[in-house]
Picture 1: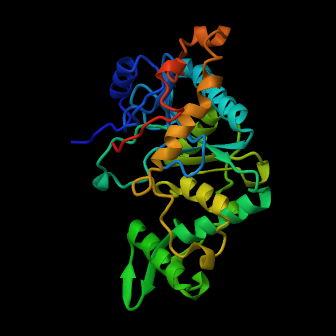
Picture 2 (picture 1 turned 135 degrees about the vertical axis):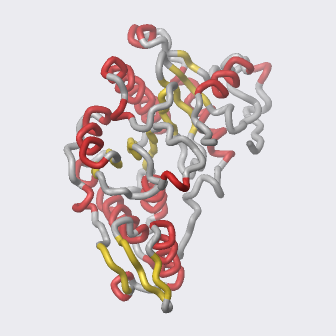
Picture 3 (picture 1 turned 45 degrees about the vertical axis):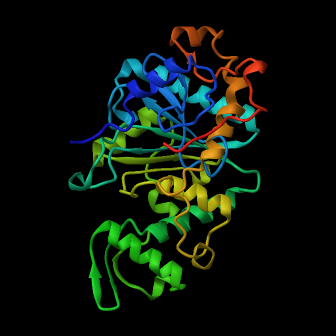
Amino acid sequence: MLIDTFSWEPYEQALLERKRVLPEVMTKRNKAVADTKNFYAVIGSGAFIPGHLLVIPKKLIFAFASLPDDQVEEADWFLNKMERIVQKTYGLKTIIAEHGMCHTPPSERKHYDHAHVHLFTLSPHVTEQGLTKAIDFTLARRAPAVTEICLEGKTYTKADEISEQFRRAAMEGVAPNTLSFKGKLLTLTDVQQYAMDDLVLSGRTPMSHAGMYTYFKTPWASNSFMTHYDLQSQITRHIVFNAERGIDTWEKDGGTMEWRWQENPFWERMVQTMRDIAPAMQEIESEPEARRFAFRNGVILPPNKHKTNGVVRQAHP
């Protein structure tokens, strides 16, 4: 039986239980920060940078490009509002990214691929050139368009196995051009296949061509991209992580998997992000469009008498 990881009901229940006051205990389902008629936002797990949010439809769909027409305006407003809140709070540039449709073979799925859009911040030290290098390196490291690789007399053809062998090469300092493989090491130019306009509407073209897409909108047109290549799970997180850490060569990478939220949830940063954005969130409810889309803030700061030295306690899920 497949599980809907982003089913709205458990998040809504957690909001009701804490009466939308900033939680004292952070749990897997107690991460919601706001919702509208058809969407909600949560703190992103694996927050290796502050301000990482996810925007998610309340109903199960598999990509934002599949949203019905009557929800597009609301989706655009909510995404834009969450982005501006993060920008206002941290004074940082942002990236909006989505894996539209599944990047896991159906036979290997344990969860429904409930659509979700990532909102990442970029630290001031990340430059346009640095992000481009991180994109090119991550594509080479993941090798999503390689169909076969041979190492030490063994042949690998599954996507996860191929990716793991390129990871081994990074750990051992083996240059990619010395490996025996079939296919192509993609670069940024290869994945800049579609116009970068509105997320929902732009995604409908690659969806119709290939049934999936990756949307990665940066502060710069030069390294934003939308592609129908299957770039594999979490590649947008991987790119941002590499850009933040300045990883753009195999020697710097060393095979690290620190960007994987499953192993590194970064609970403390998740808690701090929720507290950081609370003041800006509280200013939205009085706006006319907020009332129109039934916006509700989910991170109301508690009265001073309820604060515990300004610290929110956190717990594992």
